[in-house]
Length: 366
Length: 124
Image 1 (cartoon, rainbow over the protein chains, first blue to last red):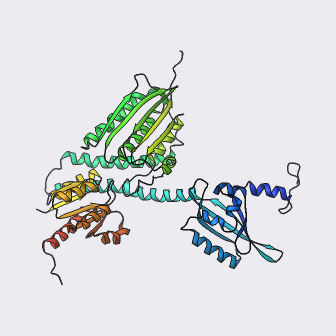
Image 2: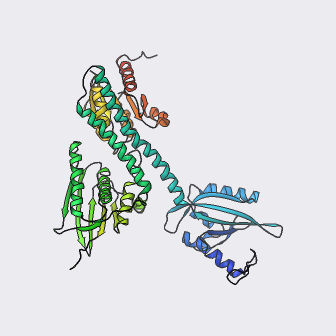
Image 3: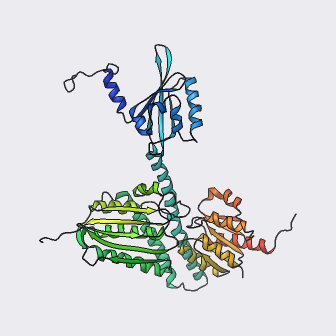
């Protein structure tokens, strides 16, 4: 049956030029090797990926781009495949043009000229993101277990206290009940966060005009009070703002949550304490709130990724900063849905500034 | 009365466990690894209950610091990572309790180590 005026063609009868177009523009990094395993061809995609010339890559030149830890294994498996002349698949790290090593998956197929073994045709594709997602998921599950375990542990302690008191015929002071209660609240907050993470994109927003300054002030005051109640004097949160109204159209609950997450991160990632500066500005029809801490900062290579759910920066291991890695991602997603943006600037070891921007809400008339 | 240092970054655990143990021991608390090391340098304690997941200096760092200073104080590691028991032992932990734990079980471990410390077994 003709398709779009053309007869369907069997593979193998394309004009050579069309094959060339396919191969050179494929998203796959392609290559060919001779019978001894030495490579005699790389497509455009490969050369763009590594940022090297064909001459540099030919023969065994491409191995210079393989991560030193993976390269012996790469050579070894190549020799093995050449001997066996069988299709193969493997993963290794290949240096991209920007100097970063990316995990690639590679598949090679033997080819024959007449009956003679000619070598391999192969293709690689970047699987770094898949690998990162897998490891992020794994560590998220571990953290989730930890985050749930802590309130459970302290809840069981407060209940044990009540039990021991009652065994001695003593009443338990009411504060023990409130403490147990607050651990239960903590558990339900965790569950809410998890649920939120799974459905934040689907829940409809309920937008209303509101005063951004009032909202920011409320959240700052709540956090300051909580710090005081915990007896923590490490941090001082200050709020500075331009003298003007800050009307925005937003979902109050979600915006409170988003800003709260940013503030909580600033507190959490400045374990030695210090000033947390919250500043409100207005420019060109946009209102912004920035939260700056003098904390541990984010490694430059991770700044782009902290917006992904379950991503944890390299200097925030589960050993020192427990967390699910969803707070910032959720805040960003929420603000973006309110037509705003969240920007992050950070210097490792010096601190982080996160700025949340929303379009100013224009009332009718001049 | 024996002096026990509880190290945990969670205030509610310090609060709950502290209150429970104060019945029978003198209790000191530290909410991160650095604070724990400072405390240990300032006051001699008879036993440490050590959490592993903490900011600034984690439990492993504290254990290393304690042992490198030659302190013989018994340490009970309280962690969810039961799979790392061998590592904790290698770092010099005397005992281990898996979180979440029963306080009664922890108290038994504390008493056992304190008794051992008071009456060390004769060297063979």
